Each structure stands twice: as structure tokens, then as C-alpha cells.
Length: 586
Ligand SMILES: [Zn+2]
Ligand SMILES: [Zn+2]
Image (cartoon, helix red, strand yellow):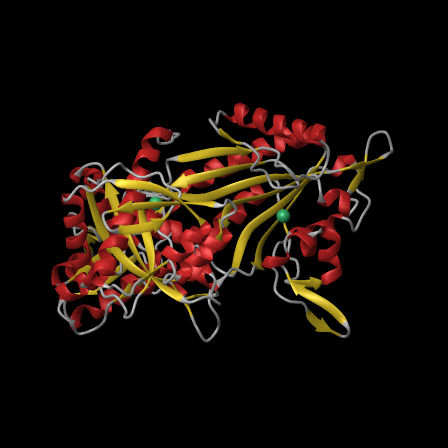
């Protein structure tokens, strides 16, 4: 495996400054086109910048070249960015016509406010910026989106323009190419084109409906994962989606996690909530008996669907949702077993990431935050245990200081997709809080009661987000074992339909997902459709194939393979599926 080195700090900071300076230039350009514009904020973001505007009319993509042209003029005139400090009162007067800026000024703690001016345009800003507009070497405005002021749907909806800026034209061109590729691979687009899933206003935002084809992929992932878990000594369990509010008070979720919880439902005078996590059900199962040290470790796994409130403004396709199914598990063990258990989870995590075809990943070990449960001593021991486990399995990692959850240290693995974008993958968290709150214990060799060590861990994260990552990684061209439909049989004419249906039935009998395209359309059109559907194999069958029991095989890439006997095709496809082969060529 490959561990990526982070961009050097200095390098990315310099780029951030240029990106952010470009946002100021964009704001000036927008002001010159819309003198009535009201300004929100304009930060640099990963790989770019944006600025939010309140404008008299909706922007269209046609506006972007006009704004760019204006920006180019400002850059060509190479005017300096000049810093200026004024009192809050002076700032209020300067921005009297800018309600959003006034709101920001009111929140500034200092008596002095810093402003930046380029030419006649002035903005409220802490800086820093490049010294003059000419230092913005290459930029492009890429999209327009709606964004609530301060991300809050109770506030006005502003118009956000996204842009990118780079040191060189080459770097910009390379980035734009990547954006273009990312747009083609966007799982929301492919999810629609390939008929994988949908989200409905009528049902509510962030709630995913899995269509038959998406459900095939999910079932394959879940079955593969479940089989692997059982091999590795996990027990599968099922627990309810709602539970009494009191249980969540005992756990501390009601206190610490309330913002993410849906309001209680009253049933027979008792309040219940929809679960945001699966942990508590597993604890209740554990606690149905007195557990001996001989039984440990116990590993309870569940494909547990949970519901968390997220603001509608931050929801995004399958990757940020309100209801999702985690491949969750909780391991109950003795403290002395913690290291082996973490090694076991890391090994499983690596196996899964590799099998699904992700080759680059980055490992982070998050340590004790300012507010924490348990003693510093148990934190140190557990963090040391995680370090030893990572070393034993040979994973390089970086420390994320203070980023552990309040109840224990954790390891996060982020994997990269084909475009080098990071996705949240496996997490392993040690928990000192819940065992204590629920008095989760075992009877030791000494016949005394001891507190268990508890691990929460997920490997794929959630089925929803994992499908998003797979879809974007493969651009919808899933490996043959995951493809919803693996073989499309395409008869040349109606007289070949019988043979085509015979192949379909035989392939299905062998567990291969096959289907005949029986429409009376031209062969080329059917091939084109199968390619758009990203079906791995197309079998074109005509007179010759019928007469000789052969098939003519085409791949979704357009590659044509040598004509071969049906039997040999069948055997190799079956092998490719069993081996989870990445290459379709037979
Ligand atoms: Zn600024
Ligand atoms: Zn948990």
C-alpha cells in the first residue's frame, strides 16, 4: 500500500492566500456588474474559493464569462491589496448598505476592524492576501449554487459562485480536467443514469431509496462482508430502531448528542427515540448474562440503520444523509485483549479496502481531546495500545492531536478514489464511557467483577456513503462481481432470440446476472445502450453463433474479444466473479 504525504504546509498556505485574494477580485467584479450587490463571505476552500452574494436577479452560467472578463481586467491592472484598520463605528458607516457585513462587524470582539482595499473595492477581512491583484496567475469560475447565509435555512438564500485559482495555467488546466472527470463520476448523476437510487422530496431530504440495481450491489457488499465477519469470529445480531428515551439518557447521547437526534415519539406514556447509533442494543444483549472472562472477546456485528438529524443545507447525495446503514460492530474484551482486537479490525479493514479496489489510504490516530471521559492513565494506555497495533500490522500513521472523541482514542482510515479524493473509511474507537455508564463487566479469573474494554468499529462506514465512493471510484463501471447486470445478450435478429434466451437462462442458472435485449432495435444501438449502462460483457449472437454454439464477446470499453465457445465464456466469467477480478479481459 501507499501512504500519501500531505501537501507541505507552506505550499498550500501560499495557494490558499491566492485563492482567497481571487475571491476579493471576484467580489469587485460582481460589484461592478451589480452595483446593488450585497456581500456575504468569500473564503478559500480546498482547491478553490467562493463568495456569497445577494443579487437582484438569479445568476446563470452565462454570467460567469462576464464576471471572469471583469476579473481579468482587475488582475491586468495589478492594483495592490491595502490593509487598513478602522474602529467598529467607522466600519459600520462604511458598510451601512451591507447588512451581512454589519452582522459580521457586530460579532467582532476587538474595537479595531481590519479592512482590505483593492482599487475602489473595500472588504471586511482579516487577510492575508497577495500583495497585488497581478499575483493571481490563473483562475476560472466553475459553478453557481444556492447557499443559505451562515448555512442556516432560516436565513436568506444567497448565490454562491465557486472558482479555482492556481500558480500556473498548466496547474489550472490539470485541475479543470479533474473537475470535469469528477462531474462525470458524480454518484448523484450516475445514480440516476444507472438507476441505482433516488431521494424524494415527498419522503424527505437525505432519505435514500435503493432501486433494484443499487440493491443488488448493496446485497453483494453486505453478503461478502457478513461472510467475512463470521469467518473472523463475529456474531451477527439485530436490534430495534427505536428505544426508550431513558436508555439514551443513561448513555449520555441525550445530553451530548441531542442536536443530531429526532424528537421523541410518545407511546403509552413512554418516550422513545429513533436510534442514532447501534451501540446500546449490543450492550443490552451483552448484559443479559453474567459474562466470564472465558467468553471474551465477544464481537457483535449488525448492519444497523440509524437516523441522525443533519441540516438540509449540508445533505449531499448518498455521502451526507439523514438515514443510513452502518456496518457496525462492538467488541467487548478484557483490556489485555485490546491490542489483538485492534490488530484484527485493522487487518479486516485493509482486506476490505483492498478487495474493493482502493489502493491508497491514510491512517490517523486521534488522541485525547480537552474534554474527556475516564482518567488520563487509561487514555494513555489505550492510545499506546492503538500505536502498538498499528506498528504490529505495519501501517504508517499520522497523529491527529486532540481529535479523539470524548470517550476514547480512535484510528481513522481514509481511502482515496481514482481521482485522489479522500473518503472516510474504517474507524476504530475505544470507549471508556459506555461500559461505565451501563456497568458492563465480566467475571475475571480472580472471581471479581471487572469493567470490559469496549471497541466501536465500522469498516465500510455506511452502505450509502460506501456506494457513493465505489460509484465515483469506478465511474459507475463496477467490477464484474459487483455489476448489477453482468452480461447483456444481444440477438442480431428475431430469429436469434431463442438462442439468446437459452444463454440467458443458462447463465442465470450458474448465478451470473444476465439479460436479453429483446427489443427490435439495431444491434449497434443495443450495444451502445449496454455500454452506457456500463454492463461488463455483451454477447452478440447471430447466425454464426447459433450454428456453432459460440458467442461474440464485447466489453463495455468497446473492446471486441475473439469469438469463443459459449462454454469457455461461461467458465471464465464465473471465475472472474469468484476471484473478484479487476480486469474484464478473459
Ligand atoms: Zn480577504
Ligand atoms: Zn457504537
